[in-house]
Amino acid sequence: MDFFNDEIILEDNTVLIRIMKQSDFDEFKKIAFEEEIWEYIPVLINDDASLQKWMDMHFADYHAKTRIPFVIFEKSTGKTAGSSSYLNIAFADKRLEIGYTWYGKEFRGTGLNKHCKYLLIDFAFEKMDIVRVEFKTDVLNLRSRRALTRIGAFEEGVLRSHMILHNGRRRDSIYYSILKNEWDFVKQNHFADM
Image 1 (tube, helix red, strand yellow):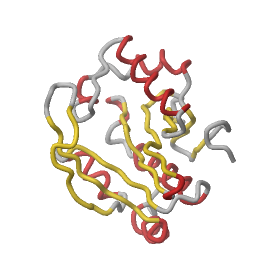
Image 2 (spheres, rainbow, N blue to C red):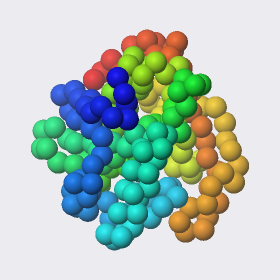
Image 3 (cartoon, rainbow, N blue to C red):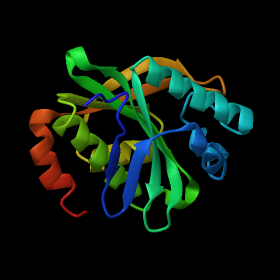
Image 4 (tube, rainbow, N blue to C red):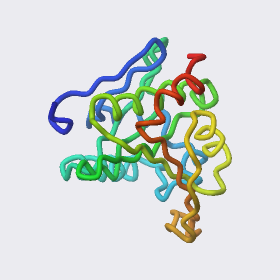
């Protein structure tokens, strides 16, 4: 499978995930302009121009074969719920990051993220032959940190003064990971309730 040219569609009873397209712009506009989404992320999307710039960055990385950007749909309503990416893809090292994940307000805290993470992690290990899936978040983003702990990700450490956010604050980033040889245990102990 050519992960940068073939269509990737991941789904279960709750969510459908597919590669982001320019045609997703109008649906993203309905949910992306909430300032709370971008509090811990380097960019701020608050108008059409910043949304297009964000999408263009993702498409450029996709063509450079370092990111696969996804759009996430809630299956029961068919609504666009948010976005996530495989990024910092290093096939030679058999690792990638799942990140730049965000959801519109009505989809946060609904369990949708757990379904998305399961599908993305499982595909990385089972289809892409990845050995290490990593995640990073702002050390201050307690919601994200709790979510990563709930899915069985191992906390690795903090990179101090790691990046600059759109508001000028220097962010400390905390890394988490799941390894392929841990995946069966993680599935049984953190995703059995799905």
